[in-house]
Amino acid sequence: MSGTITFEQELTINRIAEVLNKLSDALTKWDEVTVDIRGVKKIDVACTQVLVAAQKESDNRGNRLILMKSDEVSSFLSRIGVQL
Image 1 (cartoon, helix red, strand yellow):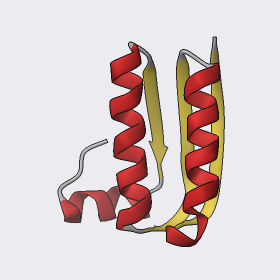
Image 2 (cartoon, helix red, strand yellow):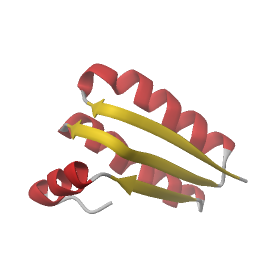
Image 3 (cartoon, one colour):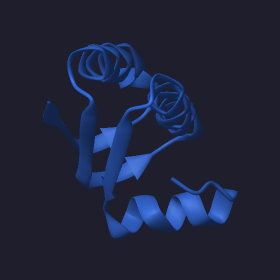
């Protein structure tokens, strides 16, 4: 079973609890999780770490995590050397 979770505007430490909860629930509920952050204009390292951890957890479970990124997020991840 698959599903999508969507985040908008900012993914920063101020929203980390929300991001963790939504990702954890999605990874438990679905075999394939699409994380749509195309509407995110700002992301910080804290939320980037959560996305990296979610990717690793998904891999460990034998599931699939798909990340749909905005240009702003892609640029930030590239600058800090993270590939998701």
